[in-house]
Image (cartoon, rainbow, N blue to C red; front, side, top):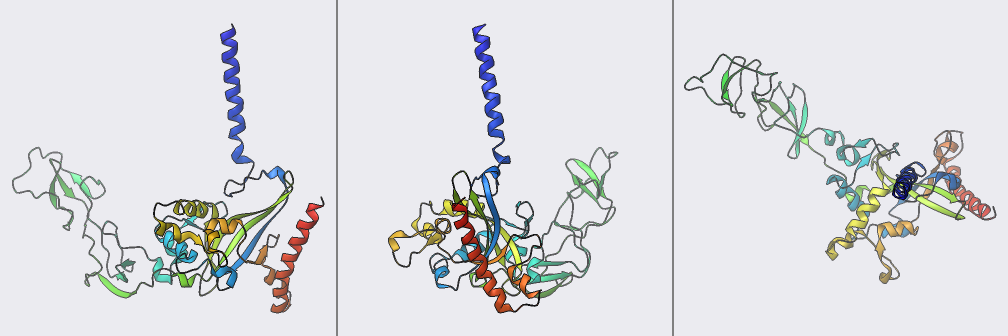
Length: 353
């Protein structure tokens, strides 16, 4: 009886702990670094800031040995940093590197594949150039693909001289081949996909413009939640992500999760090689003994970012609010600084709460 009671209590404790721990992901923003429960947030606003790397305070993020712009671009190209739709703060709508940091429309063309069907007019990237197909090309399927082949089940013994299937050849309807001990006949034409350098099938286009260089990333937007934690009586700047801007239009190109960026910086900063670790160093202009990595520099607010937008029902930038109401651009500039002062005053007033 005692053993059964102890077993019951043990199972009850496991169920209770599982219930408690199972609720963790539902009470705070799991896409953020700071785990501040929603019920502890007395005050929260999402803020967009422009970080211009040409400013002296921000220029140390782009030093010759540790360039944050180069770090972002190269890791996006390598697939180590994912990019998302600029408005998707759930980080579920992933977009390709070509869309995120591609220069020009041609960088969005798909890469040529010999195992893909092409129709006349299809455009691809091959090497460093773009090509346009002049006719349809259906790549050669293996006889196991019943859409293009049918097995002659009445043939028990393969005829002498029947050629084995060769994926490098083209096949027309009715062609017979040997495959896995059986005879198969093609039910459709398969011309084989020719490489784009074959001028009978492709027209050569302009060179691919490629990806952004580090010089193209002269400014990024940082998106953060400004949260006052009423239990700890402390204001937090919880960075959510970076927005990459198009160098020509200034439009939002892609969103990077700050949590993923933080984890990658942390991994690189603990690499075995000093050369690799130095690529994520924030250089202290006045005291090199206090160099730190990019993530620590953001945590300590060692950057200057001018407020672009503060969360509002109309989802308008500060400058848009002024200009669309017939006010001057100069007034909109002062309004952005005023938003900074209003946030500082709000923090001061919350300390008195």
